[in-house]
Image (tube, rainbow over the protein chains, first blue to last red):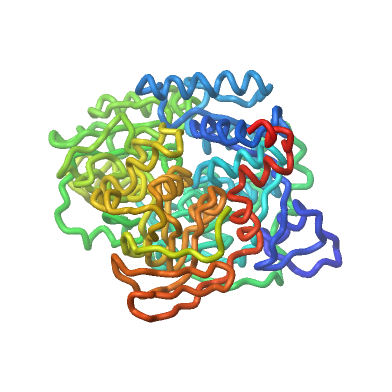
Length: 431
Length: 171
């Protein structure tokens, strides 16, 4: 912990100070931080190759490494099967216990959360850009590349330039049909794809504190799409009660991981959710910052609707979809894909009857994983096809053909659009 | 080992927010041989660029180059296609780190250049000359850590020297 006489710091500064053994740090300073948790998915195979090239024989700490297969599960090709096989051999050789194989986990970010791997104040590095998600747990969590992870496996540390912090305070309440996804899409639309490049983001304010942990994960996850290095939600009672359900770890020191009241920010943005979010927000092709209020879209017919991903494949998202689709049918021209974010989400959604409702409506359920979001399998788009998706990227060719189009929206909009066969406000479907 | 003075031709000028999926499509993420990634560089959006890259050529880009995924293959594909350096108004942070870690110079500068122009990059001096147009541009100083890594030829040789010097002799 930083000393009591340290200057006031943001949460990013506090965590980096602790992890680099300093009493304080300030923006632009370069520090070497020890890594508390190192997460990889299928690209663990690429990490493994770089690790072998470095030439050391054992990873620095097998207890701090978590590997979760999610991008191509079950293996869609012999090449991928061989990758999975190499990863299984490596985790066994290195004694890496925290390995979540096909059918044991799900999407890496959801699996880390559900299994209590991430605690406030940690430094988490993941070979996945959406590792920012874990800022919802008060962790300094960021994405790195495979070779850099091989460096973490070797020495357990990374260099960081201490980021300046952008604080976003959201007051008011989210109107009906408006979710965390709409809020963060709105913010990305305002700030742009590089609006938070290299920066830390702190989300706070009554609207954020009122959100479920799952919704806060949406904010931290998508903050990556405006370039954030890390993005935090507040460490509060709601988070601690989530953590109590998911870990046996000692949580007594967690509440200290909050920014100092007089910390220095690069900028403080204040917005009223009720005022700016009059209607659902949609990110139009082919950039995540191409955000429009739904009514500005006109008639957009959809061939596919995708509900899933590390952004919006959690239980509350499936619940919303089931609510919208109950007693209704997916439009004849549209395919609805449901991808629970994890085995645990899948099981709970089964028990609660959400999946029965969705399948009865004509949806198909994919196994818990990244599904078609990365454009590999399980719902690839043909040229000319249009998809409405609760996922996180709509880049050219992201989900298939370079001539396909992906619109990003909330689970409610995705479910309603599946019924209408075109992008619609959920109130048009559920009266 | 990266030289401080690089000379080359502009193979392509790319728009702002050129993302990782445009640089290297997700469908090829199970390719883990770095040199083979080059075959798919810009495959979906700009398939014509790959064929015109000569060893040592540069890419010139707008802001936020490499935004999106953490996929190292994006930086690897650029490097192994023969590109000597990427010059961009700004880089997305993971791409920047991946490039430096693989020994590919990523230079922050706003330059005026067109395809085919001859450029000279002075990495240490923070200067880029457009020899074709007789113009000179300032480049941001590299982070000290990036200088160290580029000098070593990337993170792997840097760490090998530090943690497994014995393995150097056998190579």
